[in-house]
Image 1 (cartoon, rainbow, N blue to C red):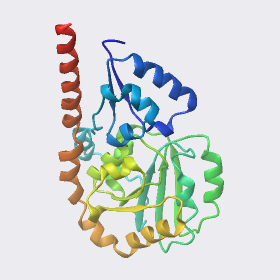
Image 2 (image 1 turned 60 degrees about the vertical axis):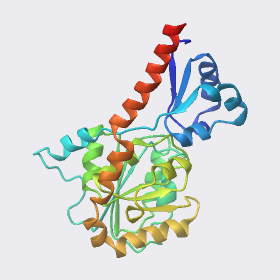
Image 3 (image 1 turned 30 degrees about the vertical axis):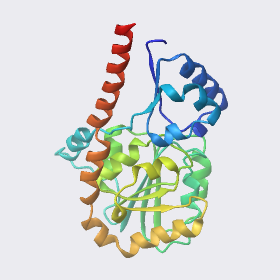
Image 4 (image 1 turned 45 degrees about the vertical axis):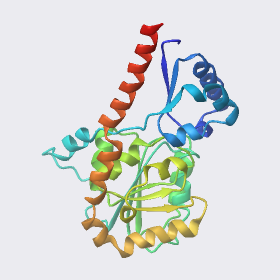
Length: 267
């Protein structure tokens, strides 16, 4: 471990207590600790940061745009959404309390929208979410597809109009970065990792995930401005590459390993 770089790929509050203790143990013994973004680093409790802060460095997560480009150029076109759906929404993440899919379902009967929502992911809340979705207006089609491949997830994002995450906690979410590159309009909860991503203002609305009115208003905004939002899909693509491209992340880790290697050579 004295020659090891340990990466913390989440915000501290998301880890279970057992895993927090295990992380502390490894972080203390590792030569260097990288966090997947500044928000992840800032989530460390003061006491832990006192012991590991000097050897901690944020290396912001990156996404593989080449993979998305390859999926987008695939000649086999598959429609995952109903062709008649007015608004196509995708929500990616494990079906858990942390990912907070229920916050979206609770607002749907108050929003003035017609369309389709596809939830990708599986988890302990699946059945309760399916049961709740049966209470939703028939003008909104809701589908739980479970776990799918990364390529298929990207296919959904390329087809969707809107990507929603009302998560209560994240590291620096790759799915958000990928959806931004795919051109989805974003509705995101106001948590530090989402704020760190900070998509162009024309392509994102931040909401308090506990505030049903804010979530409802964001959905109504999409419904009222859908055509304009479709025309603006390109706006977030350049930004996502410049700030969160895979090469940025790899270069960041390369610098960490070079410094570590030089340190041990001197030793």
